[in-house]
View 1 (cartoon, rainbow, N blue to C red):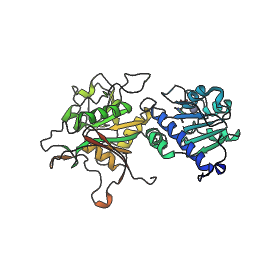
View 2: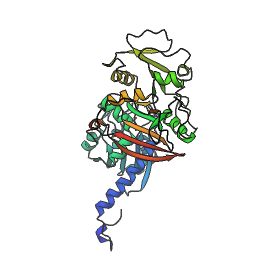
View 3: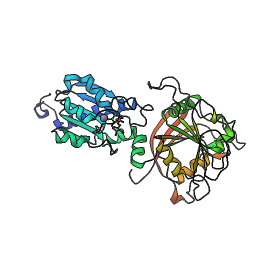
View 4: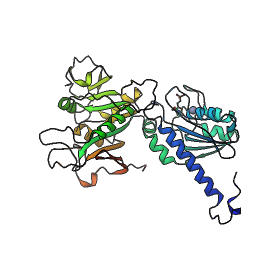
Length: 384
Ligand code: AOF
Ligand code: ZN
C-alpha cells in the first residue's frame, strides 16, 4: 500500500479521498464490464465484478453473460485465484445468497478469503438478496451505494422488472426537428439516417419483446425483427429474436401480415370479446375503460413470460396510451435535422390536456448518430 497521504510532501488530499477515488475507479470498470452482458442476460440482470488484491492491484474481473452461466463474481474470482485472499471485490449488484441456476456468490467470496466487498446497488430480488448481511456476519466489510446511479442506469430494465413486477418499457420514435413522424400524406420512410436505423436494430436485439399497435401493422406492414450489424456480444443462442407483440384490440391483423412471418415468435393481443381465427398465438386481455386493451394486464402477462424489457415502437396512439398509463420508463428519440411543418405528431393523445399535466422528462444522454441526434430521456417520477 502507499504511505499515508499526510506524510507525502505537498499532498493536500487526505488518504480517505484517495481510497474513495480508487473505489469509484474500480466500480466504474465493473459497470462497464456489466454492460458487456446487455441483451444476453435476460431474465437475469447485467452484473460486473472487479477484484483487487490486498495491495490494491487489479487481480481479476468478469461479467455475467447469460442466465444459467456463472455469475460475475465467480468469473472474477476464478481469474484472481489465490490473489483474492485479503482483497476487495467490486460488484455492481449485491452478491446473491441463494442457490438458483448457480451457487451463492456470497459463499464463493467468503471461501476465496475476500476481506471487503463494495456494492453499487442492493439486490431487490427477495429470492437472491441477503448476500451483504451474510458477508458482514462473517467479518467482511461491506459498503453499498458506490456509483449506484451509474449501475442503476445500466440495469434499469431488470431493476424495473423486479421492483414493479412488470417489464421495463422503452418507447422509441423517429421524428423531424418539429416532432413529426409522418408527412401529411401519411408517408414516413425514411425520416432518419441509415445509421440511426442500424442503431434501432441493435436496441431491438437487446430487447425481449417489440410491441407495436395494429395501426402501424396495417399502415406499414413492418417485420419487427432485429437485424443488427454483427457486432453483438456472443449469446448462447445467436439466432434469438425478440417476441413480437401486436396490440390489436379488435383482432384486425391480416393473416398475411409480415409481423406473422416465421422468422420470430409473435403474440397478437386482442380484447377478450374480439372474434378471430388467427393461427398465431393470440393473447386475450380485458379492455380498459376507454375500450382499448388494458395495458397493465398486457405487461403483467409479458412479465409472467419473463419478458424483462419491452421496446415500444410504432403507433403514436399506442405510445400515447402507454404514456397516459404511466407505463413508459425510457424515451429514445431519433431526431432528424429536417422540418415538415405538417403531418402527424410522434405522440398521440397522452392524457395531458392542460400544460400543468405535461409529462416531464429528464434528458439522460444526447448522442449524434449519422446525421441525426439520439436523445435518451426518462420520465420524472417521485423517485428521481
Ligand atoms: C446474475 N448474475 O452475476 C449476479 C446475480 O438464476 P441465477 O442462479 O442465475 O440467479 C439470478 C439472481 O442472482 C438474480 O436475479 C440476482 O438477484 C442475483 N445476482 N444474478 O444473473 C450475477 N450476481
Ligand atoms: Zn450470484
